[in-house]
Image: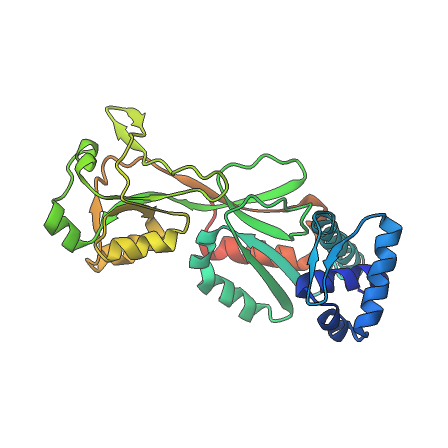
Length: 295
């Protein structure tokens, strides 16, 4: 990023929390980095870092400025690629955001990396709702509906949830035969990281969608931890079908109240409409659509 020397110095310092390490990365002394950032702060009229003799840390203004720098770099790279490499082989840095569930797609991500070795993947796994354009993402995978005129969208095959328990748990507690029976069971609940709310368990009873109050034995904002608890016989959990399908087939987990569960989740890939022609984005979207299927 030689076009943006001071911004690159700032970003490297922000990412490493060190003027010395930032300088090592871009071939400058720590004092040169410090002078560059001090001049940048003077031009902007704000302090970007808290400084002490031992460490540096971003100020609130620095955090905001870092987001803008990522966007500037991403837009510059996109413009450069669009102008000079629109028909070239897919390559360059590809920043992709996934929900935490996306870790289950690692086999597909590995296959993509092997198929396109010239693409440098920058993966972000988080359930927070990222701003694709503002934060400089090339693409994100999301669960649920999206309405943003700035974005292109490709729907993929979605998934549904299943209630499951370990065989040992069922032996000890019995198999629920109706949603009302769950009042006497240990329910393991997922908490949305973004809102802090518990994910409901949706049941279809006599044609009506019901989300009953449930007794809660454990709560987690990480779906893999709930899977571990279920496998250890701690309780019953509502988990994505693709996580439990093979375990049910191998009789390591038992489906619970399958006929009552009414739940379908859309999955899509989103990317900025301004970058539609970039080969690396076209390659990623096409590859994932082929591997996962389209909805």
